[in-house]
Length: 233
Picture 1 (tube, rainbow, N blue to C red):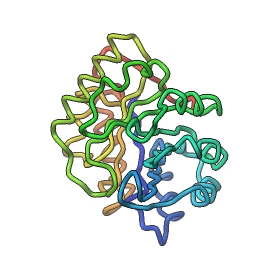
Picture 2 (cartoon, helix red, strand yellow; picture 1 turned 120 degrees about the vertical axis):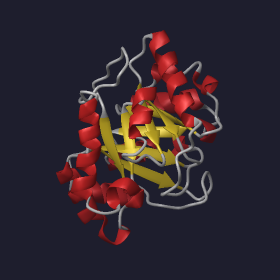
Picture 3 (cartoon, rainbow, N blue to C red; picture 1 turned 90 degrees about the horizontal axis):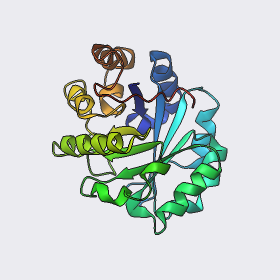
């Protein structure tokens, strides 16, 4: 099932609640929340108090992407704040397996993100424990970057790996995704699409509809012999 996640990194922070209500009404499937600590990535964004506040205004699933060093310190706090899925970076964890287990222990979906230069083999012994793998299609830290074309092959290879192992793992993509290139990543095997600037720049309702219309071209399904239904979150 194809899902659209809106990255609020591109929202107007002065009207964050209003922007979230707009995209929720427009029909996005998830709110993608990029948490940055100024260490793992150069930028600093928002943390637990902000997530707690916006959790009160929408029923959309919260897809919390932790771009922070040593994320295992805060898993429980983000769950309590309202996260439905927590994605950590393979590069930020000394003990990736135990951090994944900690996320699963608290009963939310578990994801691992890979930077553009990080090879897929880092998932060798944890892939079967994941609900989602987030392929970063830009280098993390800033909104509005250009899609790195080499990541299309990475998405395809990941989809082939998931299929080969017979796993129910979602493939999420984040960075530089717009209606102009979203078909490319869907055809490669992605089924969760994160879009920020291409939704918040202009009319949110119109922009969400444009993505959804493209999804309908594929029958809302990944165009390979693989189906995942993430409606349970």
